[in-house]
Image (cartoon, rainbow, N blue to C red):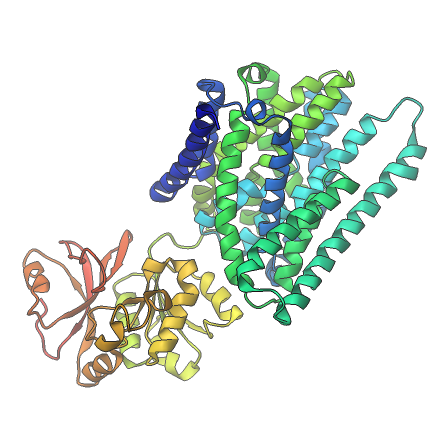
Length: 603
């Protein structure tokens, strides 16, 4: 392997993961950083030209990667989400798509200067809002579940539909002279409908086959992920053989069928695939952007710039407005969905291939399709990536950005802790399956959730709340560990805590495995029985504002206060744990939540 290829692999993998980490650390849209990195490697420095290095296999490899992306996207399309968002999802995927096609085509012809053929191809391509862009943005946006479902379903469902629509337009435009409506209605359209029906059947049939194997224990755990990925790729290949774009339908339907068949163990597989897809999306964005050359960018003109502005500020908003007329969607939801529509990898891949075929066929203006689509992709990624969270907050469609705490298990001391956090002004929710145990917290104004968090309904209900940290505070140490292990992928393993199971059970080798439990809340000696006893003896949870006078007292090991949390109101929350490498030291101006002895003068 030549040194140039090794250097390219290092640049792409290292740079893409650094961009993802930087986006997470500084709360930036990862897609924008990846897009910028690709431009740097390709058109700016000209050190990377993937289609030349990889050759004719480049576009097929991109297509296989996209198949995995839409398969993983299908795994999150649970039909139960349609209970709240069903009307909006149907309108966005069925009604808005033809409206956006027509408006986009007219804009391309009258403003972009394209002939009607290339204009309709452009219009069919830009109806796609790619899951490669939307899903990463949704992971960090903390949108309300209903609005997030709108964008998620539109992106994943419209992706293969848009690819097939572009194929349909291309086939019609490339019909030979003398082939008229008879050819279209007698061959092209029936072939496409039959191919779509076949691929849908293949996806559902494959999912039923997987379920049959899994419930009979005929598939080992170590092979589950590998077999599912292989099936998704085979379905894509079979679908593509019948018709371009149909393979994406097969992969998407396969993922949707798997998640809606309620197969045990799919949650772990889904998390593994999500990590894989993050890597694939990162690499693809860098490669596809780097593959753009200065000659292609030189085709950008004022007319394309004007077309891009019309697509962003007129075509999409007007299409959504028309599609949602008479619906129950609020004006805030219509404005938000009408603006947020980033395009991604599928649009770029389809534009590159279809545009060249039209150009070879001699269509006037066909050479403008690729740069026009690229301008829309670049503009939507940057503008929508940076504006999604601010616009969502402005329209009150996001969950709170302030760090929030979820406490599982309502009892005499956890209720006191929740009330103290609530009175300190920090978001908190107390979760339990017993209405009577939650009554005291509810009467004090604390948000409560009656649910079993280990159930699917309970986990989904908890995810809809703005939670960043979790404390499992039931008297059952094994149950606490199960809750923390189950919800760690959602909250983060370093942000799930449980009341101490006892010093003896924390032995690193013989005790409860750290993978099967949360971090210890406070000191190892603060077990459930101790905390319950102290509260019954008159100890109380209180919020203490840290001042220059009492800070030294709070930091003393001999202090009678048991400090559980350190709050920097509206900014940060720290749960105190003996397992932290750096202990939480309260600063002046912060607030600590502490268990205080009776008659203790904490001021």
